[in-house]
Structures are given as C-alpha cells and as structure tokens.
Image 1 (tube, rainbow, N blue to C red):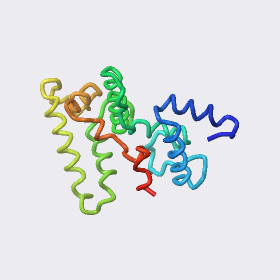
Image 2: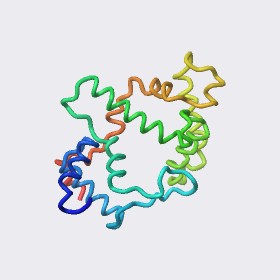
Image 3: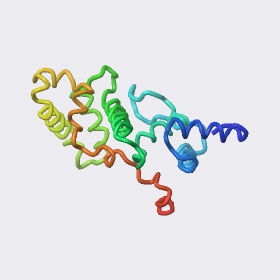
Length: 186
C-alpha cells in the first residue's frame, strides 16, 4: 500500500474515499495480496476486449469492494438513497459493457452467459434465462417504454424502476467485511 512512512495517511485517504474502516482496509489488503500472489496488481482474466482494465491495483480493488459494503446504521434517508443509487449505478455499468447508457439484450445475455458458463448443466439454458429475465424487466417497465425501446436497451432510469421495492442492501452485501465473522473465514 505504499511506503511505510506514508501508509497511515494513504490508508486514511482510502478510508475516506471508500467508507471502510482502517481494520477492514487492512483485512482487504491481506486478501488482495493473497489473490494477486503478492503482486501490486491483479490481472483481468476476462477473455476478449471486455473489461475496463487489464490490471487493477489495490485502490481499484478497494473502490470496487466498497460497492458491496453494508449500510451504516447511522445513515439518514438521504445518505441511504445515495448509497443505494451508487450500488445500482455500479450494477448497471456491469451490464452496460459498451457504456452507451443502455443495457441491450445482447449485453444482458453476455453477462448471464458468463455467470452461468461455469455450470455445464445451465450452459445451454443461459440464453433462454437471459431472454426471460430481459422480458421480465421489460414487463416491469410497461407503460414507460414502447416495445421497440426494450430491444434498443434499458436505460438507467428504467433500471432504477426495476429495482424499486427490492432490498439492494442485502442483494449487494459482502458479509466477510464484518470483523466479528472473519475468524470463520480463515
């Protein structure tokens, strides 16, 4: 994480930027070193032109992980809305691989196929699962989108409407960040 003389200041900056505690940052740094094989970066192992970076450093890793941290009990409603909105923006951008502000059926299929490709029993079904999920998304947006618009892609505003009433905090939450349960993870 840098030279030892600048580490406390550097760690404090990361804490301010990501919302993690100093203890959580230290734990995540140990995990990063394990994943990277004690190297300063982790290679992006996605094949093809996908992926925004060939390598990510610890700060990038920490920033990504910050989207999965649990909500803080002392957040007011405005802070909660902002926090949830940031999680949903991150999730939206995972699907919107060409960064055009829309999730197309092809982009959605690709993500679902990548997620299911490791399971040989679901590999054949991945396309139909993605198609069904996209049609369900379209049905949620009925009245807000014309049928032709669904095929052009779902915008972030439509994506937000799809997630209304769903507890994003429990869907995008990493429990290992709770320092009390970390002893069970080793």
